[in-house]
Structures are given as structure tokens and as C-alpha cells.
Length: 77
Image (tube, rainbow, N blue to C red; front, side, top):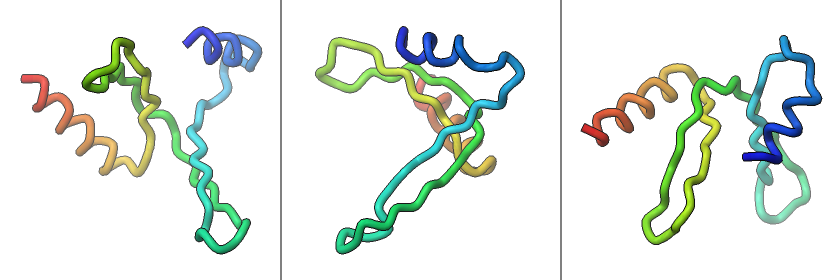
């Protein structure tokens, strides 16, 4: 978390924050694809068996993000 805060501190305060997901196009080639999403939420997450909390930056298509966040909220009830 500290590393992310340090990186963001050096950026303009009015800059938009995006999440860039980099993945190979396929396993047989060196080409990559980059999907860019606005960060729509921040979610603390704990994996079973791990002692620490991980912070997820949540982004994606608006409907998908809404469905995901709704499902998380329902799971907490």
C-alpha cells in the first residue's frame, strides 16, 4: 500500500486513475493486449489462509463492476 501511495503522490492531483491489465494474446507468441479501465472502487480482500489484507483496485465495464460490487455486498450480509 505504501508503494502505491508513494507513486500516486508524485502524480498530478487531478489526473484520472486507470487500471491497465496486460495479458498475452496467446501462449504461442510474444504479442500482448492491454485493457484499460477506470478504477471504480477499492476493496480490501482477505484470502483464506493468508494473514494479511490485500487491496484490490476494482475496474471494468460499468455493468460488470456494479454486479461484482453488489455480489460482494450481498455476501457480507
